[in-house]
Length: 397
Image (tube, rainbow, N blue to C red; front, side, top):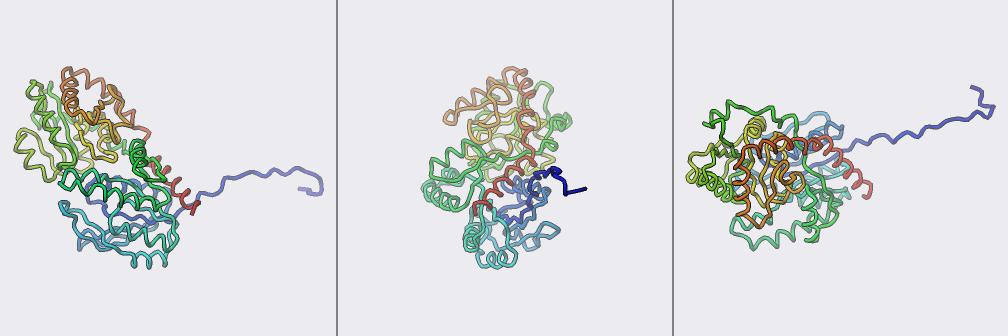
């Protein structure tokens, strides 16, 4: 090519190369522990790994045999923890600022993401600030709302004050719904970003419906299966679940009640509802069959930050009866893929269940709209949203 002539040269504007991050993730719960925080965080971290980010997971050691593992793009730092009162299967991470300072000084991450708010997480926040590392956080549990269910309602204000101080020291706090964002902003929380939870739409699928399972429960062809999924504990508002079921029985509805989960209220529920099916703790594969084999999910909890069961049921083709809060507010369209009740109207919840079950076509029509309402919530898309927030936190320092 003769450059002595005035030949125009075209220069293409290439997009800058995608930056792969070194992300330190701090959490006080992790699988095989079974709870919404552990399960959804594990899904998110897995998909961040698939996007070629390097992950360092910092968590409490779950038992003496827990050694963690390392592989390309993944490492674990296990620290001390103590069982949580009333939740002995979970660990509360102990303060570990010195260990974190040493680890992050030796191998500096690009960003620290904190998923829980216990002592381990507070010390991680302190260590990150000392080392001038960008920090983001998740708001995943309404601890202040739980207080009223365990006789310590007076703790609600101090807990809110602690959580506000904690999260306002991070660049961004991710919350799962717009309603939660408004609620926390009213309490003085700042720099909130809405990122929904994802749902595995291949695992949770209407094709998992099992007539054999329904028959094993003694369900006749004209009967309806009501499903409750979650910890059998006071904060899940299970008294209303029982009242709803008992009202349906009293009205002569052909219904079978199925509980998936375990917890301190199980013995009481079994005594009040001995004819119900109790599945205990279930794997996700078992849950996928349960959701698809049910006709209606009863989910009257008022303490959720999100409520993963809402998305899992919808993806499985099962309509949901819930209060107008958390994930239900964002993903249930009233009278279409489920039903929303004002949070201060428990009697309306029971009446709506009576209305829904008075005509079998009501639930059948709702099933047609369930799955399409969550198909955009694949975990890779959610991971991409989180990745964007991480990049922004790094940019602003």
